[in-house]
Image (cartoon, rainbow over all chains, first blue to last red; front, side):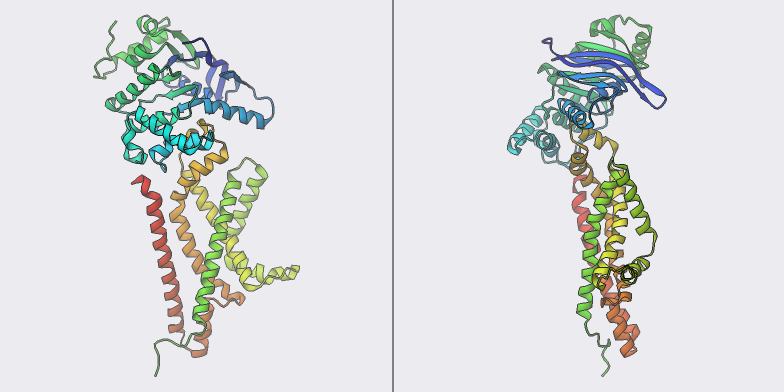
Length: 266
Length: 215
C-alpha cells in the first residue's frame, strides 16, 4: 500500500424503484490494497461495486477513481459526462459472477477486444500482451478455443485475464467463485492470490473466508445498504464488532461445507 | 409430337427477373431492417416511434395492397415509378419491416450480462452493439432471416399483377396460349422450389459457421 487513493466513494445512495439498496456508503480503497466485501445477499455488495465501475449510477454521492470524480445527482452536459464515465470504466475492470465472456470470440479475442477497440492499442502489441496474460493465468494453450469449450474455472480465469488486459487501476470482482464447484473455485482463488502478490488493487465480493483472511488488507461488512464494519481480517474474523456480523459469520462457518480450511483456526 | 412441357418463351429471363426482385429486395431490406432495429434501440424517442410506426404499417398490410398503391396509386399523386423498381421498392419496404423484427428479436436474446461486460470495459453503446451484441444477435436471428428470404422469393410472384414479366407471369402467358396450365405452373413451381432449396442450404451453412463457437 503506498497511500494513493485508487477509489473513493462518498455518501452513495442507490434505489431500484422502492427498494433502497445503498444508503450512504463511504469506502476508500488505496492503491495496492485488497478489500473484501462480505455480507448477506441483498445487502448491496454487488450494487456497490457496480457503482464503482458506474455500470449502475448512484442516485446521490460521489465516485472518485484515480482523481476523476463524478458526483450525483448528475450535473453538466451529457456528452462530457459520458466520456468521464467511460474513462472511469476503462480504469476499473470488472469480473462478473456469471462468466460474461463473449461467446462468439476465442479466448485470445476475448482478452484483446478491449485493448484494441477501446484502448486503441496496436494489434501485435495487444496479442503479445494477451498471450502473456493467458500464460499468467495458466491458459496459454487455450488461446484459440471458444469459451464454450472451457471449464467454469478456466472461463473465470479468462475473464480475469480480460480484465487485466485493460491494465486497470483496480479490478472489481463480483463473487468470482460462487458459480464454481470448490475445485474449480480453487484455481480461480489461486489466480487471485497471485494478482494480490503482484500488488494489484482489488475489490472482491466473496464468501471465501480463508481467502479473505489470507489475502485481504481489509474486510468491509455490509448489511441492508450500509457498511457496518471495516476491519483488518484478523480483527473481523476474530472479534467482529457488530452483532449482525457475528451472526453472519456464525452462519457462514456453520455451513455444512466439507472443504478443509474453512473451519475457524484462531 | 407433344413435348412434356409447352413452349415457355422467356423462361430464363423470367427466372432472372424473379431472382433480381428477390435478391435485391432482400439485401436492401436487410440494410433497411438493420437501420430500423438501430432506430428502435436508440435513445432518441421520435426515431423509436417512427421505427415502430413503419414496422406496424408494412408488416400489418398485405404486400399486394402495398404493391398496388405504389404502382397504381402513386401516379395519381404525380409519382410514376416503372414496374420493376416499383416491385423492388415495395418488397424492400415489406421485407425490411419483418427483418427488423427478426434482428430485434436476436438483439433481445443476447444476455444483459454481455452489455455489462462490454460497458464495464468502457465500450460506448454503439461499439458494444457492433462488436459484442450484433454478432451474437445475428446468429440467433439467422433461421428467421433465412425463412424471410425464402418467403420473399415466393412473394415476388405478386409482381406479375403490375406487369412485371417474372417467373409466374411467364408461366401464365405460356399456359394461356397453349391451354396447358398444369405443365406451365408445375414448371414455375419447380423453379421456385429449386431456388429456395439452394437458399435453405445456404442458410444451413451460415448457421453452422456462426454456431462453430458454440459446438
